[in-house]
Length: 109
Length: 109
DNA sequence: TTTTTATAACGCAATATTACGATGAATTTT
DNA sequence: AAAATTCATCGTAATATTGCGTTATAAAAA
Image 1 (cartoon, rainbow over the protein chains, first blue to last red):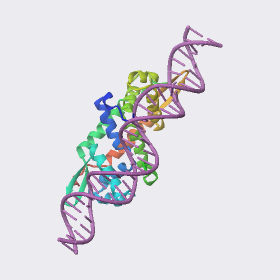
Image 2 (image 1 turned 90 degrees about the horizontal axis):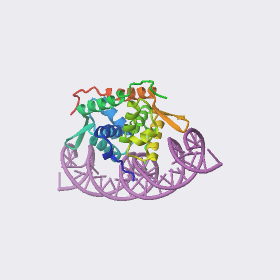
Image 3 (image 1 turned 135 degrees about the vertical axis):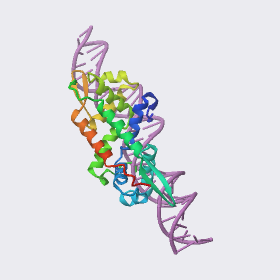
Image 4 (image 1 turned 120 degrees about the vertical axis):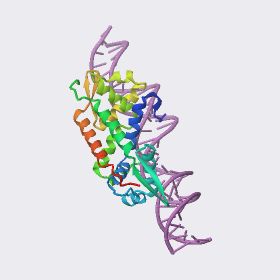
């Protein structure tokens, strides 16, 4: 095997996992930090800021885009990446909701 | 390659990524839901609840444990898994902090 | 038009992950 | 003590991810 049995879990669990997975690499966290803090939503500047090759950065951007967390708009020869505000908040909400299902009761061990 | 260049990123980014990575699989989300909702903090019951083999579930539990999100106490022949309340809240806080660095300004595209 | 710049896409190599059956160690149960 | 339970670990197979060099494409600059 090696492939995740997605179909066996709930849509919600898959959604949460998908978002978390996209956040599960330090390079992508670094990229999101740049996009979040930067006044501009850079693009190739990201490559300059990170110690990774252009192709590697491009791939991480692709994954963030596929997870819906960012968007990329073509501007001439450049591409402008931005955090997708709507999806960003939705992701935060979904994760928080997950965390909140645990009402730290001492119902345990 | 194939190995993540962890040393190249900040401790914080690595920490966020580690937590997110642990949450990046639907089976682990399902397990956490069980632990969060369940009155008891089950163990082998998890295997009964999920359509995965015992060894696979055991491995997911191991990863959640390594990420610090849960603890496992041996109780005779059984093992009792629980959400680690402290780490759980810390994880939530770290992720929220990450999300909050983006002040949805329309500084973009 | 040629050249430069900016990105995406392709393909490869190294690792990592997912999943499972089988085995093993500890613990109850009989 | 023998058998059954409970769980971790090992080994293996399939697939995914990470990272990079290289190539392809498109726009801007010369």
